[in-house]
Image (cartoon, rainbow, N blue to C red; front, side, top):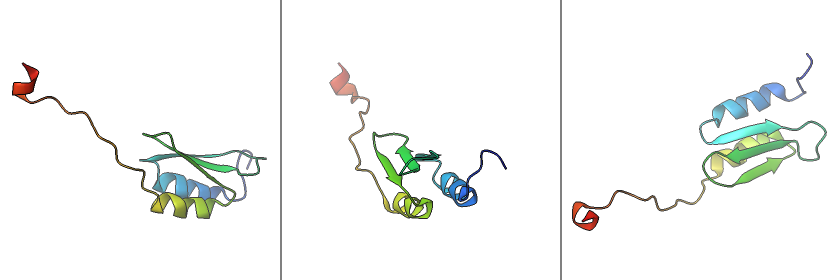
Length: 77
């Protein structure tokens, strides 16, 4: 099939499994063709093996960050 590559079924499974947090892409002809960009922070992981990338995405947890909340009523005055 045109547009598909040898590891496409594995790539599609990894992309589907991690789609909530990661945008997983494939770049044909690159030395490191598999990349994943975290959807909420500026982190990108790359690998030449899609299965290894899948394991890394499963194990990787980005650092938490402080979220701004609405001020208390007494602080808002």
